[in-house]
Length: 131
Image 1 (tube, helix red, strand yellow):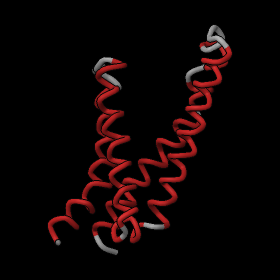
Image 2: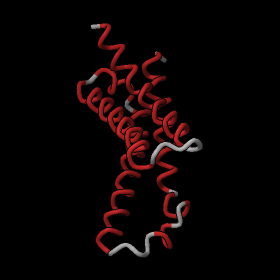
Image 3: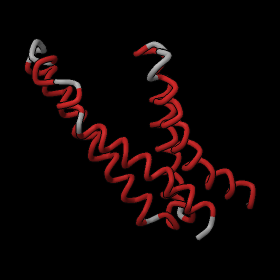
């Protein structure tokens, strides 16, 4: 197995962990209580977005393991890799803008986002230098 596939699969593991974490948000953050003051539309949008993100993370973790070679070799695969890099990059930016950097959790979130950025980015950079 080459380093590009290993890189994508490591990123896939982190993506699967993000999926698992998002699946637990309702209970971990006590959304039944904490979100009860939201109006119905906002509450529905909030949950819909989280369920969609759960699906997206699960799908991309699956694609990372099942279709690693296609992600490297196909144009659409490289677009998917770049898309994942952007998702995790935006998450890092949001850590600073929306949450404000905190000493305890921010470094963990940033590192957990940097791993897939590097994992999904390595094959893009390697292929670019090989062409």
